Amino acid sequence: MNKTMTLFMILLVGMLVTSCQNAPKGVEATTKAAAAVKKALPAAKTFKVKAGSQVMWTGSKIGGQHMGTLNITEGSVSTQAGKVTSGKFTIDMNSLTCTDLKAGEGKEKLEGHLKSADFFDTAKSPTATFVITEAGGGNITGNLTMKGITKSVTFPSAVIVSPQGVSVTTPDFSIDRTNWGIQYGSATFIDGLKDKAINDKVGLKIVLQAG
Image (tube, rainbow, N blue to C red):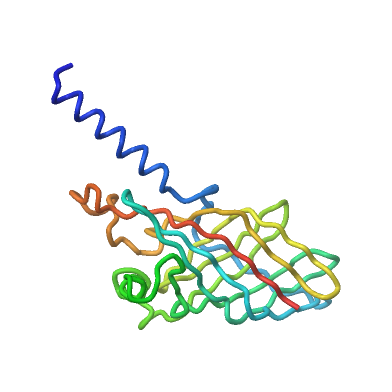
């Protein structure tokens, strides 16, 4: 193997290792076509989502990553016999905040770009919704709607049901943003991006309280 080829292989391996290091943590959520939504049972108890419920996000590329939060502003979850039977939640996309950058050091620029038409287009789609279609066995399945596109998503979760309410927390997991038409900076759809490509996978973690 000549010196040029050896150098190329070293650079390629280095890029792959860096890319893997910046990949979202946890398993990738299973994404399918939107599923049928069950009606709440007559005897079910319904709890309202509490303030402070959030979605934590992580976006990455070869050169690094950024993370932040989104607020779950309203919604409800219904239970019966100690199990979740249905639920619907609203995510305020304009609440998107980057937590690893300081004001005046790129924070405002990144947040503005993520809210633009390149990504979540919050001017046209100010909210996203998640409607539970099934819960149990350590997973939650529901219809996630963003930018007018609805997909069924299944991800791991820990659900605690009590007479006072419901707590839902998830480990780190990821979704593929391109399933919702967010293709900016995606090497899957745009050729020649090289080290400027943005990972299609977006890391998520959910903490929700209802009572």
